[in-house]
Amino acid sequence: MKDVLTNRMPAILVYLVLFPWYCFVAHGFLWTTTGNTHHHCRGPKLPEVSSFRRASKCWDSLVRQPVFQSKSDTQEECIEKSTVEKRSLLPYNEDNFWGATKSASEIMDFVTEQVFDGVPRRVDVISEEPPLVVVHDFISALQCREIMGAANETGRLGRSTMGATQKTSDTRTSSTVWLQGAECEGPLQTLATRVSRLSGHLPPHYMENCQVVRYEPGQSFDMHTDHLDSFNDLECRGRLATCLVYLNSQDDSSFQGGETHFFQFNHSVVPQQGSAVFFWNTEERPGSPNYTPTMNLTADWKLRHAGLPVESPRELVNKEKEAFKWVCNRWIHPIPFGANVRGLQDA
Image 1 (cartoon, helix red, strand yellow):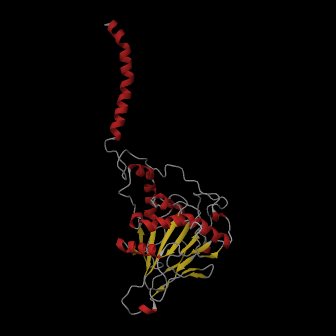
Image 2 (spheres, rainbow, N blue to C red):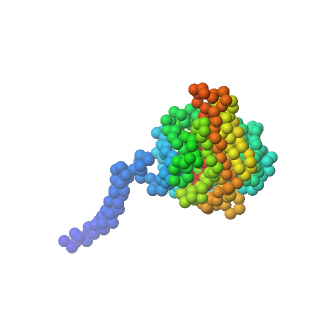
Image 3 (cartoon, helix red, strand yellow):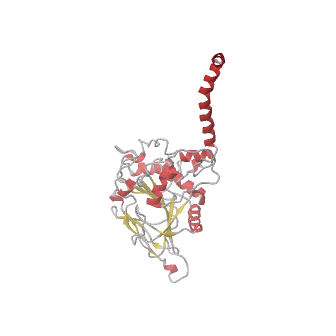
């Protein structure tokens, strides 16, 4: 017996060493193929920290934007989306154009070259510092009509809300809908790309979904700032910059009033279809001294503004025709927001 054990000892030792490894490998294989899947994608379990999960906290407490997941997304695309927050934050541009005060001519040249590839646009510089700029023909009339049509077709237009708690208020009396990327794909991707370039190339996935707002006669938005200090407590941080786009024009046959008034500069921007108003909501900006993407942001009170009351046009008084003012907002955060916003280069 002793001789038998001696002769078989090498085989027994090999078995004792290899068998546990065999069980470990087999168990791992079964674990990855028996339904342990991420709640957004089919396939193996994905990393726990995801842009969707982090952004959902911002949606719940800030804007309640719907999560959009394209049915055509491949597993690889799902994995890429769900690992955004596992990667380190993308480095911000230390040489961002807006980090230092620029002259009006520098701003106009920047818009022409960076946003429109050298094609001239009319640019009104209301203020050099803090920057407050109106860019005309930012998007086309057709794109404006498509965004308004998509907003109407959602059936989701509801009373606008305010602040981190997203409560209704007599301060803001309009109606709002958040457009997902696929609901108006071409115009929204064009808009995201141009806003990205205008901001000094902060990426589209730093933006919230496109908010479309409709004002009826008598409705307005009292003086406010787009960033609140309470937003610093959100994981997506605050609203760093705003790009407000007018989707229709003020005239005698559509609506009167509805200007965007900036109190610090005693200036009212008249709604013109396709024109965009761009400004930074915070005193801190990419490229400015000591700026970091995760720092607490301070609302810049010089950029307080209001949406003045909309009035019925003279030609439509007592006539059965809608007289609405339409705008849309793109808000940019200092870090990835997680709403799956895509620009043209991302399509």
